[in-house]
Amino acid sequence: SRSIKIAPSILSADFADFGREIEAIEDQGCDWVHVDVMDGHFVPNLTFGPPLCKAIRPHITTVMDVHLMIAPVDPYIDAFAEAGADIITAHLEAGPHPHRTLQAIRATGKKAGLALNPGTPVEAVIPLLDLTDLICVMTVNPGFGGQSFIAGQLVQIRRLKALIGDRPIHIEVDGGVDPATAPLVAEAGADVLVAGSAVFRGGSVEAPEKYGANIRAI
Ligand code: DX5
Ligand code: ZN
Image (cartoon, rainbow, N blue to C red; front, top):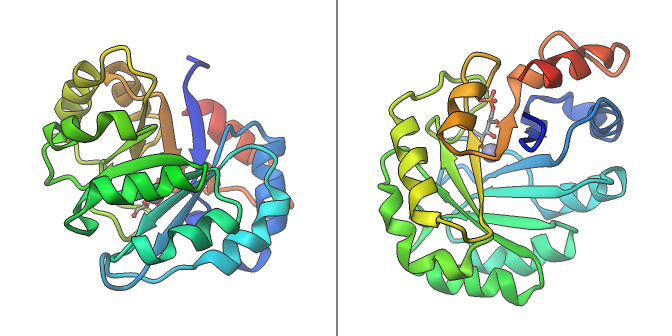
């Protein structure tokens, strides 16, 4: 259904051509742009930081959804806010003070997101719900695109949906979302679907219609 938002992860885009890649996926109908920030410490991979976010900001007309897979988080929040993030998502597992982290994100005026690794029970967010605009349920172990969907997380998405009740909190799902798994996560209660490989596969800035077909197939 179209109340579901699709957030392509630019981790699967051509890194030499982010500006045109973003313009192509926005032209082709994506809802948000998902930016995966990795530090080689919290996750075993390195990607990019605030300068890249700042450089791509002018190319994004929708929402810059920044997923921080870094620890510590707090020293970098202001830099990502200044770089133009609309939503800043930190991992619950990134440090001992997630409450402080969410307060610090809200203090910048940005939306605050909380991401959960597959091993973390969703009930851990209960004390944090009033500080949170988005909860990202990881359906892979974070660090890499193109991994397979962990089906055991569906029950967690369902439990999270019940916990949230009528609060205005997005449920985002990240990892292994494709035309086969998207209906399952949507049915479980997710309303924002991150997809990297399933959006970018087979397309390019020269053949952007494929991105549109991929987005519509999710
Ligand atoms: C994983 C990232 C995801 C990932 C999604 O650590 O947070 O956003 O790039 O890629 P796919 O859709 O290929 O699993
Ligand atoms: Zn992500």
